[in-house]
Image (cartoon, rainbow, N blue to C red; front, side, top):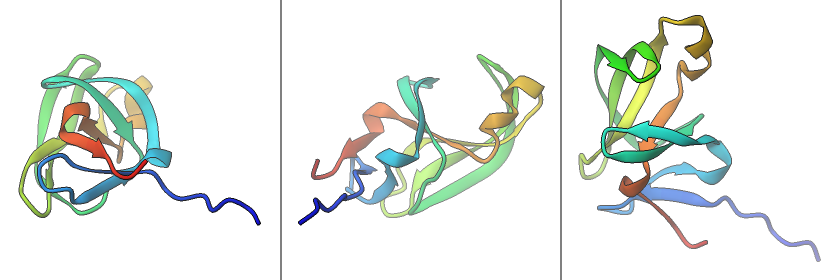
Length: 106
């Protein structure tokens, strides 16, 4: 019998609300407000804050803060728009701070 492949979920560190999966990680080498972060292609069970322009290490972007939909914890941000051509791949993607998410059952 074949092994069942289960998704490896990440949850909010505060309330354990499921927010993303390991398979959605694009990069583990991002910097966020408080240290290391992961770039995800998808996030779930989140609430987006107001869009705003922000000067980041890689240039000007339009971002929206990402909050846990259960407890309201700030987890990171979503790239809404990248102004520099080399950064366009980030549009629609999510940065979640490493210390704000936890691996669940893996």
